[in-house]
Image (tube, rainbow over the protein chains, first blue to last red):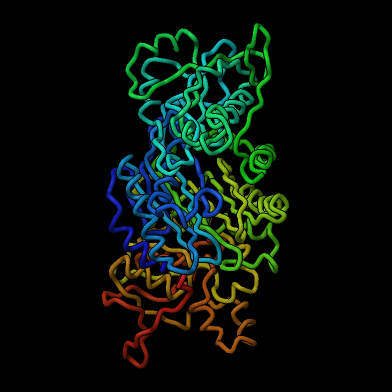
Length: 302
Length: 302
């Protein structure tokens, strides 16, 4: 069904100025960008990242794009173009492809993404969607994980925990927020929370060669974490600390910039949860003593 | 195993000037290109495109990159950067990833490709490798499928048929050939032969709104097609006509350019097999009469 489906898809894809030749040739021709290019790939698989028996396939398609948009946001970039690789179970493959693409096209329309290429296979396996996203950033202006320095403030967008209640399928990539922050502050490091606040903060710290002292009481706990804790046997804090798939941003900047940013209307809450320290690891101060915190979260394929 | 494997991989990947930030951040930062960008994605799956029980996994990894390089060659482009999405069966996933990457890294080294990003999942399914390839071409110089016009010569590189005997795992992407042809001739249309000479020629003709009159006796039949025909019950010609996975180039240009190109040393044989005609379809002249030929080949997911 590949060629007939791709022909259908070609008709459904909006023409956007960034793509000169889209689906239907050996490769896409895309207009070159100013500055530097951003590129990432992330896949989601039935049974691992979602459950096709429970989740609407359009939501799944949306998620496959949105998690990549979140990566572009974490780089402070602007997304332009997506390439999609679909692996479909042999049963009902055309219906499944159609439903998944409803969500992919919805996300594309919402974020002005061109779908420049697609590959479709049917096989004896579960639905898998791999999305490559291309975008751009001004030269040397990408937010990296590796730039946090001692004294920097650590901020988190939105609220975290309990995304499994449904938010994980329709995350809001913080693209606009990243742009607004850039207007007012110099971001020193950033990462998006995919595997858990503590685990992703630990990664940012490791990439920067620093640690973090957290004021854990200030971590913004999502109402989903509270709701989940009534049945999960875990505290709302534990959910916020380790659940993952929040797709919020963790960013660092000088304390001065963080203080002045607090006065700005950013559209999304941004909460300072601690500061970067020289000593590696995650820490909390209790009665004047530093106590080590253990990062927890979802380790892929562990 | 994702993070530890990606850390290992980061150490194995050569630093190349096109990638400023590679594996290990939320996304890669890639230097912008001159001209236009070329992008394609193609995946191969165990049981569909190869057999892990029969084929060395390093060959499979090599193939996953090479088939995409062939698409870039068919656009007349220069490849620069790859992003790789791996889906691994749960059993022996680290060993499999390591062996597949041996082939991926071999192809990358051979063609000066940077591996800028990777996603790895383990799941209850067969090995699947999706490669996104980025490259560039001078502005408005991409070879498209759609530019063939009546009277154009149709040329094929190398020889075709019987690639299943082993060539399909280690195809030679015709990148250098495409560059050399560009020095001497204006290519009007191009496609690479992935699904069969006749099927891919039919696609080029359909995209251009034309047909082809073929001198079928001039189609260069690979010795693998002869070897295969001794046991397959099909003629060498039938293999050449429809086998696919040759990853040779089919290109069109004016007859004048084709004639002058014949005098050049291109390093790879280039054989004229017919001419473009206004009447759609594939045709052969027999005793002065045009007889319709039926395109045959591998239809994905049919």
